[in-house]
Length: 241
Image (cartoon, rainbow, N blue to C red; front, side):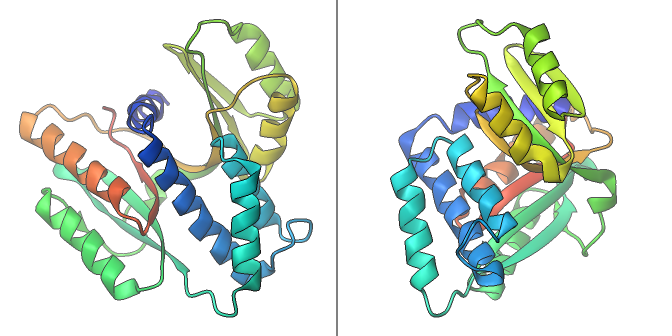
């Protein structure tokens, strides 16, 4: 699963700035709004909302910010956001899945389609690439100070219910069943591990390597534009960068 790890490394570096971190929470806030609309504002009975709160905490969002979002959307009379997933191909057939939360599907669809077209890809029909991916829970831990004992972390993760473990270059990724990611994340947090992220992800079954300079350039630009779009909540792909 090295391709997934390498992209998360790139993403980690991109999200260092305060502005990027603020955007991460803006996106989580939209997801929370959709979850509240579907199942109410009580995380004790709304499992989707409970998982998103755990996701926010894993992304180092302060509790005060989380409470403000809960209050805002629990009191809102009409929440317009809806979740829409788009699929398509980047340069040289790289499979891309784009998840969005939007209050204007025409705007969002137009933007996503234009990104694919501009950067030498094309947006496809629903289901055109999703069969190449498997939904899993993914927990990421960054060992910047090289203090983590990999064997102990792997043992702790598996005992907590993880299904797979991958570690390289100080980046550890722990895979779980989708419904177990929050429980495993909480168990590792209690053991003192600081999580970089804990979320569900679409993990590809195989990867594509790009060799042409133009393909690499346009693939990077496509991913950057998608990540920058306020309507986009998640981007998954099978490019082994």
